[in-house]
Image (cartoon, one colour):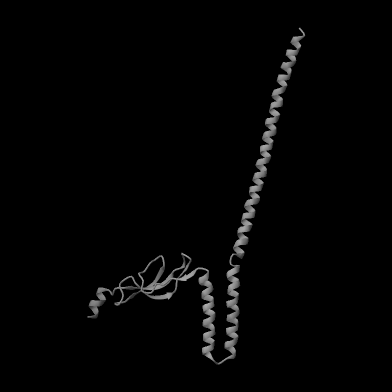
Length: 178
């Protein structure tokens, strides 16, 4: 008989154990919730920091080229002042040409290239036709005049060239002129 109460005590302790088993599961769930909230907050902070860094980068990405162009700016100011004080037009022209060369060399160093297109076949990826011109010396579809140059930045066309494109004279106009 003494043993029965021990067994009944064991049953009572077994019924108490499932409650204890639920506590570790609840603790683990609470820890996972905390971890999820912490990771969510960290990700949100990372996203905000990335946006801030990207905006900062955009602001100062052109700093180097602006610094180089300031030299050109200064030289243009000097050329204007010099032009006001001299009657020698040739020296003014030479000075402005030197500043222009300095300016173009900076742009070329940064990857800017002029699209060469005079006499080339019209390419809508490189050219924007602003007029068609009857030109008996050129085949149809050739660029005969560049109204505004186009430019590449490295390999990307950043401004297509505005061009005049040759076309053959209309047959009716040929016959009426005879």
